[in-house]
Amino acid sequence: MEDKLSSVAKSFAPSPIQELSHLAQRCNAINLAEGFPDFPAPSHIKSAAISAIHSDFNQYRHVPGICDLLANIVKQIHGLDVNPLTDIAICCGQSEAFAAAAFAIIDKGDEVVLFDPCYETYEGCIKMAGGVPVYVALDPPQWTLDPNKFINSFTGRTKAVVLNSPHNPTGKVFTKDELEIIAGECRTRNCLAITDEVYEHITFNSEKHISLAAFPGMQERTIITSSLSKTFSVTGWRVGWAIAPAFIASAIRNIHAKLTDSAPAPFQEAALTALGSPPEYFESLRSDYESRRDYIVNLLTRVGFKIQFKPQGALFLFAELPESCKLSDVDYVKMLIQKAGVVAVPGCGFFHTHLYPEKFSLGGYSYQERYIRFAFCKSDQTLASAAKRIGELIDATGCLNLQ
Image (cartoon, rainbow, N blue to C red; front, side, top):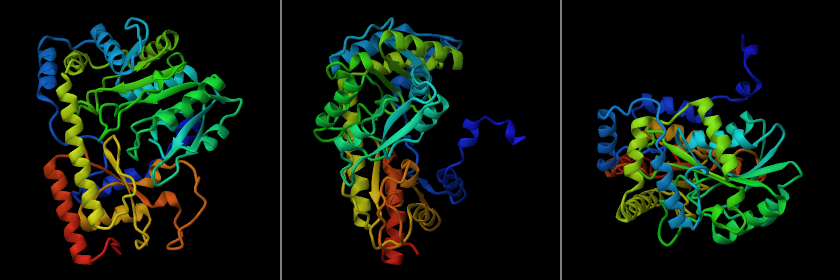
């Protein structure tokens, strides 16, 4: 009966990450793999959600006040004039907003440029829409954009560019110069852009998030997607949005209505409270995550990982195994689970093509098999417990190589 599956469904297979998740559960491992917090969401927005439930906002619902708040926010932060009545679609999280955006603009055979490594969901949405992903490798260890690689990725079939900044998995914040290059090529080629800006409020040191839509000539060709999830530690609430030119936003709303009809009603109501949070909340968010970032950077540096790039934003550290370690990323994570009781994500899950032909002389592994992503959006207790377990293992073995 498998022949009854669509070609798209057949192309999706379980990843090594799923297998490792099952192993981690069996070993009761500390979870530094998944990008969601294990500490409480802010009390003021939880109270708002509870109040909405008690007020019986429990049916299909569209809350227009969210769009008003979002329009004010993008005006204040990015200087963009957005019509809350026509230019915003509220969706079930950024994931649905991105999928609906892909379905709204991509036809069969359209090419879409993405930056490698990248979050795996993008590829699936593009393929389901009939599009063809085209990957441009960011250059390690600083994950810089090579303008020539980017420009040469375009063809007559290129329809759009996908940009995630701050970036998962590397923690990179694209520079103004890099964004200028991306914007310039989109204008020259008359291409659209879909941005994933879920980490927009989580940047470190002097880094500031700049939306691609803020560059000249880009608002009319950019679909911004984001959500409450990361900023307010509510990844399970599924309230996100797309901000786009009116004709695209209308298409996204129509697709959203066919897929899910509405985002969860009580959490839309709570979004009014969340999006109205004072500036002090966002400053505290940045400061808190910066200290967690520094903690995990110091931890992994002490035990021998190569940390050549310190995350500038987002919730992850993309750490490189030292040359003295003979294991691949997948094998290392398996051993880390089994011997230390800590789980992370093998970096190979974020690389989508063999863009790096060179091999390490030790073990013969490709570049994409030498990185591991650690999530630091965890409680102080979780991070301290992980540090203790890893430290005890290193003390027992004397090295990072767990063989």
